[in-house]
Amino acid sequence: MPYRAFDDQNCSIARTLAIVGERWTLLVLRDVSLGNRRFEEIRRSLGVASNILSDRLATLVEHGVLERDGDPPEYRLTDKGRDLRPVLLALVQWGDKYTAGEAGPPVEHVHTVCGHVAAPRLHCSHCGEPIGPRELRMQPGPGANEQQREQYERRLAARR
Amino acid sequence: MPYRAFDDQNCSIARTLAIVGERWTLLVLRDVSLGNRRFEEIRRSLGVASNILSDRLATLVEHGVLERDGDPPEYRLTDKGRDLRPVLLALVQWGDKYTAGEAGPPVEHVHTVCGHVAAPRLHCSHCGEPIGPRELRMQPGPGANEQQREQYERRLAARR
Image (cartoon, rainbow over all chains, first blue to last red; front, side):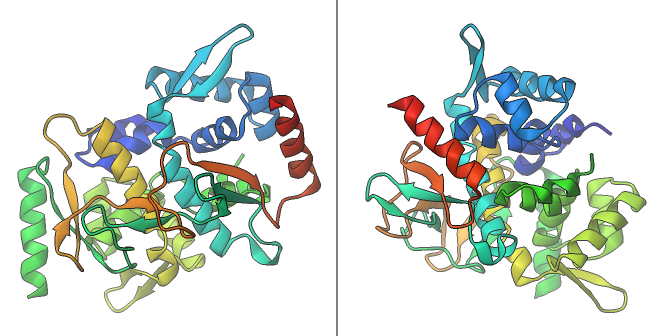
């Protein structure tokens, strides 16, 4: 079953993974974010086969995540691609915490406005306060289908 | 090349993907977050083959992201697993913006402390301000290796 079939699901995670969930794709985006913009730079940096890299770059361009421009061609993030940064950051932060070991994080982030090394934290867009690990609850949104609403109600009832 | 080989890279994204980057794994975590805790519930919800689901669950338990408990067995997020929530949230937010269409988001999040539907936003852990899309700069961290530091210096020099 191809990853692209994920976009049949009424789920924003599945639909996003249909575009960026293939093996290597997020590492390609990492590389472009780091400043590797040419095919050969990315290929060398990742050690990925050329045909796979071609396929991933084509998908990202097709979906407007990257744009390809210039001669020799360079790949750059579009605004849509830049909006994936929170995904990469969240992966980085988990990896820093659980996989980096004693050496510490290989990369750190500087908030250019205040000038300090900083770890981005999730805050509530309504009240502005930091969101604790158990302080978010999911509920059906406007785009939920009947089945998803029923499933939600069943779960609520089971907890009562 | 197995995804697990990604953990050879000195990169927190690659090492995280070595654990959660396999096809289906993030959807398994989504399902457990939504409250699907039994093998059969998750299998039905995802429409994934049993052998693949067994493999993904075993990997997640092995890495301490899920714990398996009870009879019949249920899978639950550990603290380490709950720390992956920002990854899922970031995928949701991008998908809501770019893939949900006119129907709107299938799922919304309520900040249980203030009681409002809210989109989590990234703020700087140092100054507390929201971080704009171009306001983070990457630099080598304490765990960077020589090659990574040199590459960073070369890129800086190229921009001067």
